Length: 249
Image 1 (tube, rainbow, N blue to C red):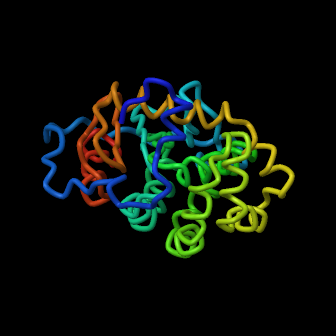
Image 2 (cartoon, helix red, strand yellow; image 1 turned 120 degrees about the vertical axis):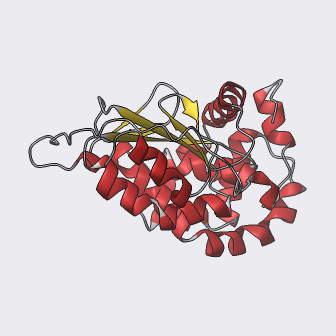
């Protein structure tokens, strides 16, 4: 996905929730099978688990865990991608509790936006404190089917409005039930509307998506980067052995 002008490209994206936004790389071979020595666990700060330690990154993502972890995992995910939701359900709990909390792996999630609804939800997950980001993202994935059922009927109505970015995302969120959804999870209506009116956030998400796509050759979501390399897998069953071979065992 190329963005010659991030604002114009964002507006040109279709108001659909098509599954072409993500791909499942079932036949991916992954990286080499070379195995590193097992890494020691690292104690978290007193009174905390490493999964409680979350901060925003310069690249627009959010990182959870030991900032000095020897294994740095980046996940590029689309909030409208069912394969990403599947990974969240099957892999995220163990990734967080076993690998991140060991201090050996840090997890950075970066939104890879594919459509205006994806962008709207990403803006709302960025709306709270850094500590709320992963919980909000997890809630979107856990309720993805119900969210889609509310967003789909709003798509045609919004398509004909030709709204500017400062209004488009707020209208989309309101008509699609997202204001109420995030309101029930700690993001007030006023807070959500203020975040959604900031079109620079949407432009940054689009620009970061383009930059990441070019840098890491991302062709689908979820995509995982381990210590700077695209490992070309998309499921927890494929990713966990890679983390283990890198020393997280």
